[in-house]
Figure (cartoon, rainbow, N blue to C red):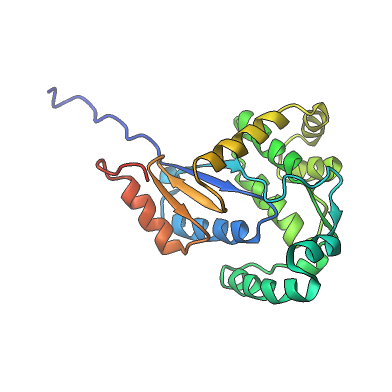
Length: 227
């Protein structure tokens, strides 16, 4: 062994996040993950990669009226309000104000996932885009099933909005999203968010920042096996 030889650089950490941009727990989970990583030096922050999971893959491309959606899913707005109160409370603890009442249409998220995949394929971090999509839906009540809205959001986070719209209009990548979603479910992931640390350790649900930080630390151990 040459004592003067430099130590090989450690492989960068990776965190794969399976989520849907209309899942409030995924938004909350994103905040918890950010809190878990906040103490790390910028140069040592893991690479976060986003993967698609459609909660409502069978919705039409134009989406559906939100009240009709709630009626079918929860039996009505009143029952949904009861359920969402717990989600709102969890959101507040994570620093989020979730405005479910502002949502008028429930979107199909296929194009939103295509946009995220496009950004990552272009070599861009999708974190800001994913954040903007969550905010647009849960805070601003924007209809993120519309390609013009998606392209505008891309432009707002520094991506080329015109290129984003052109990509969305091609329809390319749709089959890839569907296939990735299918493979994810075949792996046994039935709910989101789902985090995979260094392709070794999986954590399901919007767990707290301490749990996520511990999972990252465990995944760095050389004897850690995939789970």
